[in-house]
Image (cartoon, rainbow, N blue to C red):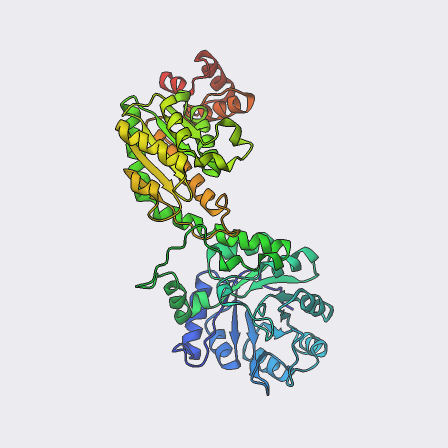
Amino acid sequence: MIDFPTGLIVSAQALDGNPFRNSEALALMAESAAIGGASAIRANGAGDIAAMRKRVSIPIIGIDKRKDSSGRTVITPDFEGAKRIYEAGANIIALDATFYPSDITEDRKELIKRIHEELGIPVMADISTFEEAVNAVEMGVDAVSTTLAGYVPGALHSDDELYVPDFTLLSQIVKAKLPCKVVAEGRIWGSEDIREAFCIGADAVVIGKAITNPIAITRYYNSFIPKKGENNYVPTETRNVRSDKIVDGSTETILRIIQREDATVPVVVKSCIPQVAKLVDAAVESLKNGGRIIYCGAGTSGRLAVADAAECPPTYGIPREKVTAVIAGGAGTIVNASEGCEDSRENGISAFENLNCTKNDLIIGISAAGRAPFVVAFMEKAKEMGCTVGALVNNLDTDMAKLADISVEALTGAEVIKGSTRMKAGSAQKMILNMFSTAVFVKMGCTWQNYMTHMNPSNIKLKKRAIAMVCEILNIKEDEAEKLLVSNNWDIHNTLKKY
């Protein structure tokens, strides 16, 4: 009996009505997948399998799809079908091992036993629940696959889960450490899905439509195109229909709902790059003219601003006053939230006046809703002073964006928990602030290529990092690097310049 394949398995199938519903065409797909590195092919029917066997030497997982009297499609329901696809060239038989009844399905335990004994090949169970996986293993299968999760009558996946694999089920199976191979299959569309499946612990991943069905592939990509005439903008305060059943989920389901929403943030951030670039260039100009970067925010936005400002001096060796942050309510609100502080315009004006700003300073207001009175008033005073003013917001056409010279609108949409903008909106703000300050100080010459050579090695960890950095850049040994750094008062940049 052959070993069950691991790695990437490609399903080369086409339903009736698909132009690729042709054995030779599917055989060419299988051959292409094999050349690309597929570990096995999944195929339906003796005709397709026979055509593929002429072109590929890798294992073929064969299935025999049949309809029962109810019209439901059942995968390899009997030994006759299993034998037929085996004789056509299948090395492994996959069969429906769900609990859903069918009038054409033979006793599965006996079917598995006959395939093993009479055909001498492995059996893979296509299941939809954890209990079915356990039962399949007890019946003697060699592998279980999540193929039918969300495809069994009475437990169909919802439309918004069309491109979402059932990783909760996969995790359950992997954690149970069943004595069989574990295969992830069903609604896997992207590289991130493959990576996650293997990180969870799958032995193999099957991809079908996303590789071998041009119709489905085209529909998938079309789903990302905004429809003309429709307003696709969703304010942050909107209720999120994709998380409306979050309270009904298991712990893993809750986390996956959150992660699915978080996965949309990098795309939003990417769309903001042109405006962030303008903000970076404005910051560099301000710093070169003796000005400062001053963030102003409230709540989560203010705390993120404080964190970014605090991290710039030790990272890039700049004077602490060159990047500063103002948070509504003062330093105490960093650890003790006081959301009412953002409503005071008077305090925003006072905060601006206390900073002794000049027209060379760059002021960046940060707020998810884009209308916090404290921040708006701070920005208005900056405009009166003649400062360049930026805004980082998460809604469209806000008061802050209209006031700013440069506005970055990271439209992250409805949060998992309605109004909790510390989530997607906060994540987007953190990513953008990271991009912004990093790009600014790269352009200001505060790095050596992509090395953090202007940092202050103020503790043991950072001194070890400085030594490793000098060793790598100068290709010298640790003791020599340490001596050089000590002789230059641990100034990495000067050490490199003098070497």
